[in-house]
Image 1 (tube, one colour):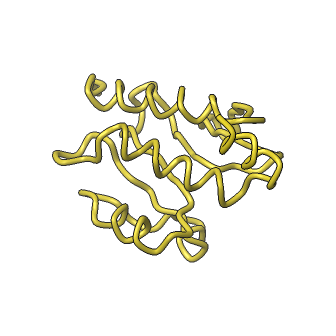
Image 2 (cartoon, rainbow, N blue to C red):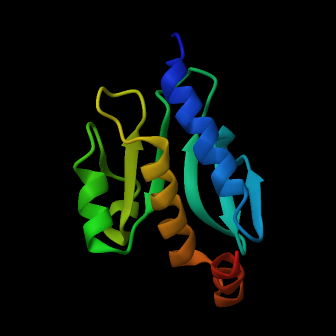
Length: 126
């Protein structure tokens, strides 16, 4: 399966953005790439090896952002019951997929829902 170059570029931008947040670590549970803060996942980045379509899963507490993310082509509440907690899976290879800038906004929103206050203060000070 060929990797969609445009989607991969977006994925790389989002990954880089996520890893630039204060106190963030990158881990690979279940063979997936995730970004964590304070031992809690704030973005699931899936895999970039072409075995699955590229996508990101973020937790959006803001109702407007949540509705906007769900309106993206192919987006759906995340599996394993995470959707009930505000997690949304957004595919990157669909026609009309969100631009990297918007995805990064959602990653920041997701980060803010799980990061400790001191790290959010550090982010706001940047």
